[in-house]
Length: 550
Image (cartoon, rainbow, N blue to C red; front, top):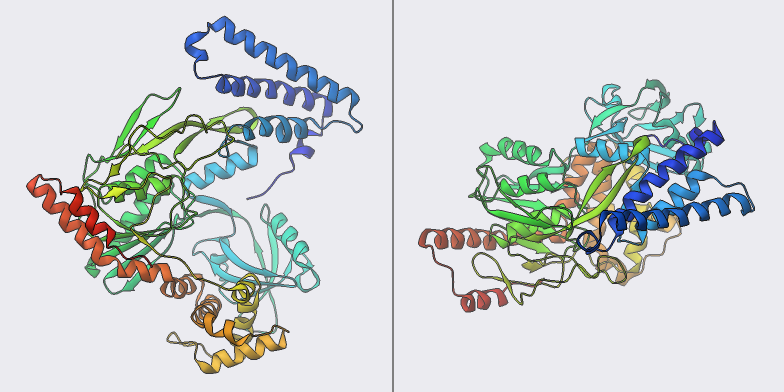
């Protein structure tokens, strides 16, 4: 997505632009002041009192701005003082989630919600003096041009790649995203480059970015974010796998920052019974509303395991909490982020918008998963309801400390300092490139054996990286997965590399092992529904204490 220079665009007519921005700022300030009035102000004060309070506050802002414009050592840039300063400053004092979006940011948000993005449809590996194609989307500008994994871009708009450092490369690539780009590319190991002329376009940006069968009857999907297309994407994938007679599905929500509310409810509805509660909203200016599943579930009988980590947030947490509280899924991984509030996007003039926290949400058990936010405007309104205990439908106790807590705790790779250094460097990628260039073919059944490990050690030694024996032994499983992942990225493309990475992931392995618990949940839920009987909580708690902690 191109990043336009707002300052230059407004700077063509400085005086007129300044007046326009100041007027717009006053309008936006009124919105902010209206929202920031104390909750009781609406019922305790008349409309005249509110208008007077806003008038006095705006007078202070006007006075401060005039003093800045008159006395500041350097000429005042209105958009910097107002957009970057006053508006963003006012919002930052509220909570971490309320923000001001400039025109470019708002446009990017709208594209993301539609499931598209502006660009060329490629994933590139960028290093100083080197740019390589890792993946190109079918039907995208890169895909239509026939560019594929392993192709090397040697020139971008007459800029030689091998003569640029990393910072220069990033700048050139950013500039190239907004207009036609001229590329010189070396394909398939050939010595002579080929020229391409490509125009950016809106390309699909699916929310499910990883999907494959871990086993002939075990599905795996990773949902990167939750947008309008998410329920449909998941439904299509499950339909595609209908002939596989799935014995289970792993729904990976790790690193999912959330997204839209309605698609989150619809996604949960793919697996929950029709009419089951997902969440309820409560806000000062938003009527209380309960969201329930509206459609018939697509696969109500499919055992389901959900994976979370500390970066699973917002709409993704809504999905996980609903599936857990209705005993529909067994949750594996780490405690999620803990975001129990909802933002509304309020469009403003000139293509800008405010994203404001307007409500808090509660799960089907009336639980808030919001983690404490001391020092913010949310601290006073996010007090947990006066309920000491929360339970799933079948009586399993639920923690109330914030976030969605896993039924089985499972950590990711436990890396020491040496392995962390390798992961943060480009060592695995550089070795994969060198290894691929030195052999004729990498077969699909390739495995990292002792010979490959020996070559990797020699590669590290040649790069001046010491290999401590103890760190090497502890890190071997991780090293093998990373080498194979990067090699398959180059040879077969990002989807195949992702598959290698997922199969070796410790949390995914824990999720595979938790399928039996997911099946037991389904059996217990069906039995309870058939008998219309709620299980004895003491019995359920005893079973809960026996859960595996990995």
